[in-house]
Length: 215
Image 1: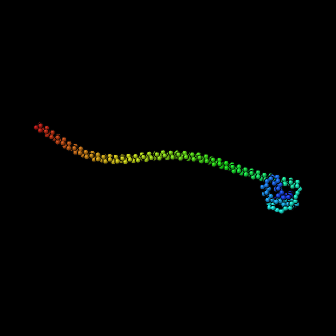
Image 2: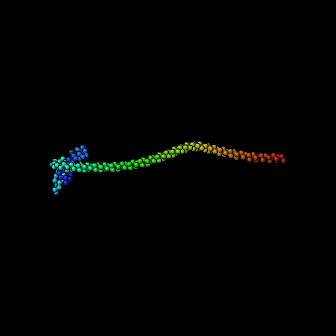
Image 3: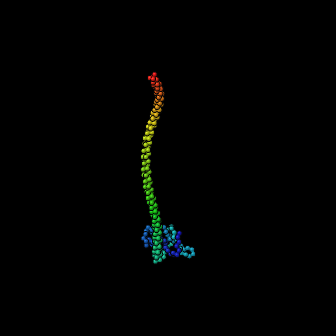
C-alpha cells in the first residue's frame, strides 16, 4: 500500500487514469491501469489527511471536489505520470543502449581478436606449409641419394665377389706356379749335376787324348 500525504478530497486514482487517458490518448495504458488500481480516502494519525493506493480494488466513498480543482489536479497528475513514464522509458532505453553498446564493443573487440588470431594462424599455416615442402624436398633428395648409394653398394658387392673369385684363382695359380718352380728347380739342379759330371768326363778324355798324342 502506498500513501500520499495532503491530498484531501481526491476522488480516486481511477479518475487520474481517466485524466491521463484524456490527455495522452493511450487506451492500452489506460485499460491496464484502470483494471489494477483504486484509491480510497482515509484520515491517518496525527490529523494528517492521507490517501491510500492499493493494487487491488477497494470500496471507497466518493467526495467530489470542485470541477476546476479536479481538472487542474487531474491534468497535473496526468502530466507528472506521463513524464514519469517517459523518464522511465528513457532510462530503460538508455540502459539498453548502453548495454547494447558495451556488448557491441565487446563483440567488436572479440572479432578483432579473432581476426588477429586468424591472421596469425594463416601466417603460421603458410610457414608450416613451407617447412613441410622443404622437408618433403629434402626427403626426396635423401631418398634419391639413398637409392643411388644402395645401387652403388650392390655393384660394389658384385665387384667384391668377382675380386674374391679372382683372388682365389690367382692364389691357386700361384700355388701351381710355386709347385712348377720347385719342380723346375729340382730338374735344374739335376741337370747341373749331370753337366758337371759330363764336364769332368770330357776333361779326363781330353787329357787322355793329349797323353796318347804325346806318346
